[in-house]
Length: 215
Image 1 (cartoon, rainbow, N blue to C red):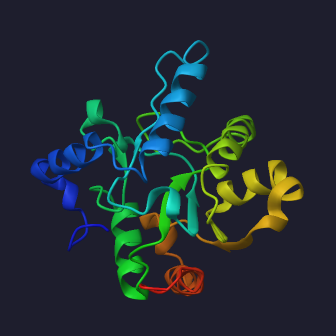
Image 2 (image 1 turned 120 degrees about the vertical axis):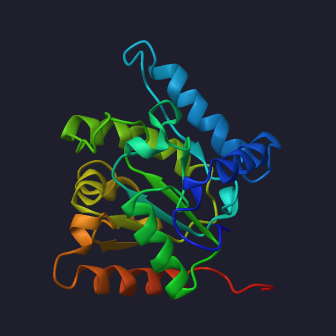
């Protein structure tokens, strides 16, 4: 579960606490972290500066029932650029803030994993993934999905995530999941008419795929 207000990682102490939680090697996060580090090592020969951020150990990890796929990690996920090192709704950026607020509004506090169809950082700016990036990311995503046996629904957030899924994964594995489509929660996207409402409605639907507490 995330912090009690958005942009919590603007406080370095909160980031340090989350790193300590990660270092404790939570059982639900450890397989995902091993996968992420394997992706980095396998691709480092072609991408010497590759950065795959950490999974957020405050989330549900391998027990997640909903996978929320964005496009690619932003610069606020890179410690060397002033970021947290995590893919997290607690990050200090507009996308994380919108996602935090929407999840809180619809009650999607648990059972969900936030990730990106391209798992590595593309640049210091919010660089859009190319078709090649999406195809390579989709290859790696298959390995991640194998670690998430309880996932029932996948939320494709943004045109790039949707395009990457449709071109590379839908025909092969699309029938295993309920696939929901919505806008990207970036500030610019949310400013468009009806975008926020569509995102809220989609995450409300996604929340129905998470088992109630105690079930």
